[in-house]
Amino acid sequence: MEPTVLNASPSEAAQTQRLWADTLQAISRAKRSLEANDAKAQRNLTYVFGSSDETCRREVLKRISLMDNKARRCRYTVSLFEGSVPGFEGRMSIAAHTAILGAPAIGLNKTQLKGGFLAKGVIAHELSHNAAGTDDFAYGRNVHLDMAKRVRNADNYSLLIQHY
Image (cartoon, rainbow, N blue to C red; front, side):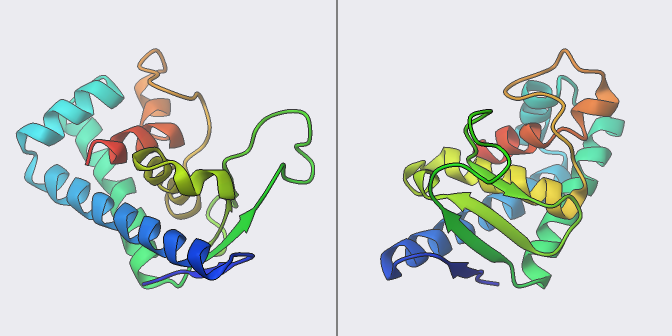
């Protein structure tokens, strides 16, 4: 389902909707791959999560399925913004934000619209928070975390989706 895009010019809204559609397609490809437990799933699980064992695959598939289901079932609102988010000024650069297990809404920094496959990862990261209750334990490839945290770490879903 296409999101409602706020605070956007017509071209930014169209670009955001294309990015959203590309992200959902990548999530669906990841879900099918994980369900089939194919070679690509095994390779991506090992690279991103540090393991391709059955427990890891099931935990990742559970969260990918939650992301896929909520994004297709609910009409999301994507609010574009520029600069920083109130409350985060001067502390970090914010690419996007959402509420964990909250309403279907994502804030997306306009700088991400030109991010290509990385932008898909940003949306996947936020969807994993919003639909699957993930957290931010670490950013980037982080196989140093224990497995329980790896499968609940939002940035791992960003990295995974970038490979689909």
